[in-house]
Length: 232
Image 1 (tube, rainbow, N blue to C red):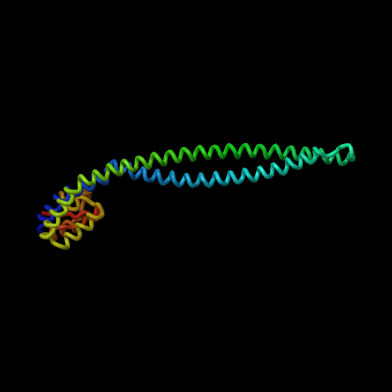
Image 2: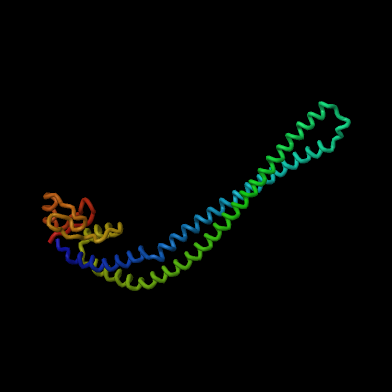
């Protein structure tokens, strides 16, 4: 099989591959993708913090109500006339008073802790929003720069695509289909020459039977790297 035209096609295609690779590896594209992920993560985090803050505020309201109830009971006890109470009633009253004091102390401690948690959540929320805004700004800048890079390459890319379309007309259809399929998998170069008894792509040695078949057919798919090995 004469693969001269296929090799000419690959030579031109290599220029297109380099352009495509330059866009895949483009630093602005990578930064834009990173900032997009950061912005999404920050946005999700802000939603979680908003919910957490709401839960804490509701919990504070519950504790405040409990505190008010306990405080009202304490005021009722303090308003009682001890002089008209029996010794047993006075003792029970002081036991209840001590218990209420303990409850109020615990509730006050809980309120303080909840308030600290709310402040921590708010600080985290503000930091998250700052991260989101910065990521969004950097994404916009990087995306704009990447679009300009794409725009600069596009004319040359289209020129090569047209040239490849012309070259493909003189190539065996079956070989062209195999080439395009491997090319779509981002495998390049697709065509590699037999070097000694080895694949010119992955350098693995081919069995004698495959070498014989390659010399007969002119091309052979490598079992290791999947490239098309040619012999001439």
